[in-house]
Amino acid sequence: MTKKLPATLDLDARGLRKGLTSYGDNGFSLFLRKAFIKGAGYSDSALDRPVIGIANTGSAYNPCHGNVTQLIEALKRGIMLAGGLPMDFPTISIHESFAYPTSMYLRNLMSMDTEEMIRAQPMDAVVLIGGCDKTVPAQLMGAASAGIPAIQLITGSMLTGSHRSERVGACTDCRRYWGKYRAEEIDDEEISDVNNQLVASVGTCSVMGTASTMACIAEALGMTVPGGASPPAVTADRMRIAELTGAQAVAIARQGLTIDKILTEDAFENAMRVLLAIGGSTNGIVHLAAIAGRLGLDIDLKKLDRMGKDTPVLLDLKPSGQHYMEDFHKAGGMATLFRQLKPLLKLSALTVTGRTLGEEIELAGPGFAQDVVKTMDDPIYPQGGMAVLEGNLSPGGAIIKQSSADPGLMEHEGRAVVFENAADLANRIDSDDLDVTKDDVLVLKNIGPKGAPGMPEAGYIPIPKKLAIQGIKDIVRISDGRMSGTAFGTIVLHVTPESAIGGPLAYVQNGDRIRLSVSKREISLLVSDAELQRRRELSPITPPTAERGYKKLFLDTVTQADQGVDFDFLRAVRPADPASGE
Image 1 (cartoon, rainbow, N blue to C red):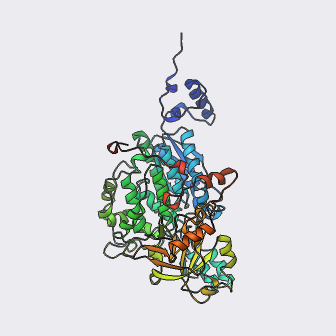
Image 2 (cartoon, one colour):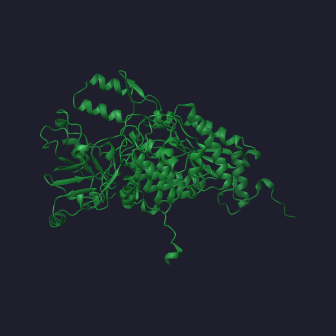
Image 3 (cartoon, rainbow, N blue to C red):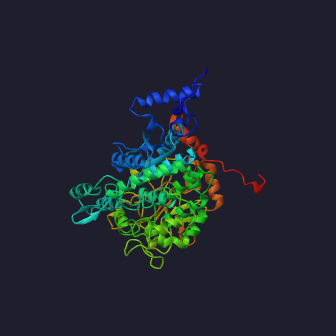
């Protein structure tokens, strides 16, 4: 007589029964899995609960994630109180300042790690712990591809410090003080002193850099619990958010609320509105394009620019304003911003709570008096934080963060001073022999996705030392790279296509005239088409390649900035619309 499998070996595909290792016998596969996990002391009762994976990105190399141990403890508490079984697992962790050659080079690898670990291990939902610049987009990209219920937990911002009675925080003030040091306005002793104060605790940058931008975008996308973007890393509020996130992870597991139901076209439109209204990092648009691409969606840069014309900057945070993330949190966080943006938002977009964004705004209440989030009638900048530029220098588009640029340089024509790559820049930018004036346009080539590789944040080209000493604080700068969201200045970024694959930027020469007109959304090289073609024929471009490893994969498959600098094979193919006949 055949013996019936015990009830604990029921083979429905939930919890520990998901994604069984193949031994040719599913019953044995589950039996073996349970035998091993019981070696860690788990009971059948525990193993029968919904399994909630926790992507653990703690690392000694990542101080932005220095609170992950405490977050996991609070997450586990929330998961178990809600009847789930928490299972944390490690993934790649990337810190902006500790990743060579650049964190962007490794973002796609982290996304693949996240996706495959979600697929490989049994879990009914996953909590993604991220904070530093590339970690949140990498996790959302990977989770979007994996397709299960997912929820983001932000690590939170650092606290601000104090230098000689002046409040300071990373990393806008890092750049400001380094600029003073280069200009010889402060000495070695002071730059050493301020270095001790700029990062006052673990956590992400305290200004509206890329990390804070992606935290706000994650909440705007509906991927965090309400209020998930703003609590600083070391606060009790952040721990309570973690506990609530754990409980909500169990809820979305039971409901089967998969990530594709959250990350819709309406959600991405809301994210673009928020990106513009917070004066967010230009990196945000690259990451949004990459996340959207994992769902077969595209981010329309022209639409972003149109939206920017009626979406003012409302958040008074550095580098576009004066405050820090902890001030934003005390002012009510994203709920306060959502109230002001409500007429422009897609309120029916679903969030991880199972409620719509509109319902969450109503549940947040009427708000209170504060001075960090401005009103639509009294913004800190009349248009969105960034503008999209086009022209013969950037046929695929370029970005400028207009809210942190010099108004006097927004309409400008100047002579090109060209640097062929980052090494050329480092070797010559401080030379007394550099032929440059304040009216020139600095051009840096070969720092795009393939050119560097990895599109580093070298687009924040330093002011040449000979000009800095004269007191020059800004100059028009153009590159195919990125800049930190903490940076500021009249800087044109993400020039597409990049110079390393033969984009027009590759053929700019010293002395060429370049015209920037933000009002006309134009970035133009004032050279005839015939002359550009002559230069192409004289100096054909061979895109960079590599013989092996991740670098080969990167160079062979990475897309341009307008498609998110993702790997082409990771983008989803959107199902054809039946009405189109395709």
